[in-house]
Image (tube, rainbow, N blue to C red):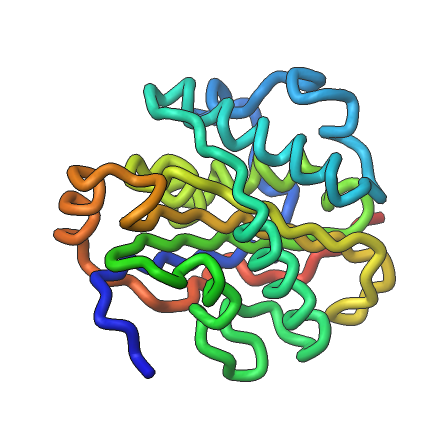
Length: 217
């Protein structure tokens, strides 16, 4: 049954890491300096807890340095992110709607009891060092659609999905990441934020402009 809610849904896909250069980098100030979020920001094969901690730190660094409030970690959104990536691997697709499943399916627990909501999702994958959290964040910040999700003021919560050492898209060492952004009413979002969010145009599409093979040599 379709929920009678006012919704904002934004999606962005990133399958190529390593394209940004510091020389012409207008977003350098939004990327936390190396080590700011811990030594794990450049490491692979992280535990789920460490991956979430580091990527949330990187995300909130970008937000606070843009004058926005930090996002609060949400275990429910963590679960949504893990479920989305697991479906991508299972279906063999790099997609917000793997196997044709509706985008909102993994958010069912988060949306339960909500009267209005806003959702956003960034997904990315890379091989070798290109799959480290700081490298993934660097590329998200250099992609308009991903950066808009990270810096969207109406979001209040975040969940992180992470899968390491995955056989994916013909590679055996893939690291998959997702950022799940949310705000819902009632609960952890102000009525003013919901009213502002309700005026936005619903965006529900996949962005594949940078869906290139990732190769680490």
